[in-house]
Amino acid sequence: MPVERNTGAPGHDGRWDHLISRLHDLRERSGSPSYAAIAQLVVDQRLADGQDVHSARIARSSVHDAFRYGRTRINVQLVRELVRALGEDPAVVDTWVQESLRPREDAPAPEPPLAAEDGPQAPPRGQLALLILGCLAVNLAGREFVDFFELPVYLDMVGTAIAAIALGPWRGAGVGAATNIAGIIGSGWDSLPFGLVNVAGALVWGYGVRRWRLGRTLPRFFGLNIITALVCSIIAVPVIVAVYGHDLRSGHDVITNLVDDSIDSFLVALGFSNMLTSLSDKLISGFVALVAVSALPAALRRDVDLVAVSAASTDTD
Image 1 (cartoon, helix red, strand yellow):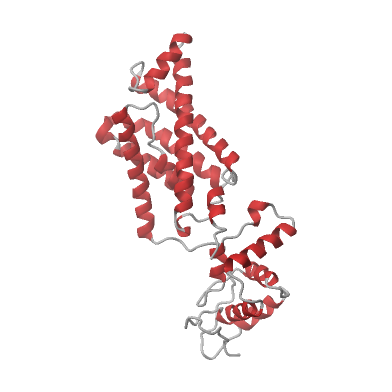
Image 2 (cartoon, rainbow, N blue to C red):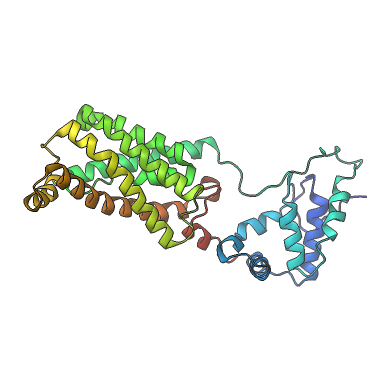
């Protein structure tokens, strides 16, 4: 059977052009609703089927991509949902698939496996490298800003949070470790042991959002930043004592000395003040990262279940 093409479709000869053409025809018969409108219909169906609000969300770009000619892979389940949203029996998709897989004279026979495409393609290496370098630059800039104004925060983990959430915990850990290695230039070898704190923060942020789903709502994300602050403080206090002793950094020792006036224990005062500092620092870093990640291209934040990203996905055509 020859491949049917929608009028005005690009002249690709993708494996699934026959199926995509059928999908375009169905959309036209349904009044040519916008991709945003179709996405909302799919969301309504999922909610009616009992899914929760967050898992029911679908990006308009995902719907748009499902109608793109020249594809080599498709998400069959998503196509069924689109067909159902457009008022057709989803079972017809199985027929379309078989027709698309049927060998044709004008195209090579497709490979048997049917691979699902659940998200955007992997980013080009150049974009990935630029984002990593940008995160490193943000960390170093925040570090210099704090040192210059002697502020009682750190701000050297904003880039770590962005990388950990957008690219994964271990890439974030790499950015964190690189920050403290590069920090040797300005701060000397004292910078190196604090890399443990930066790496720990990346792992908590990264796994918290990507595995434990603590970025789905603002309250969960707020709690994740508190957990990050606690973990970082637990690691930081022994490092501070080992590196500085009682000679703390300017700005940070003000809080410790104030607490020490009321609590006759340097370690308790240091731990309490560091926790306060870490809480404010990680909340700032985490929510700056939330905004930054939501603004990144979809290919640079694959598999990120983040509240700001999900909200941005419901934009209209």
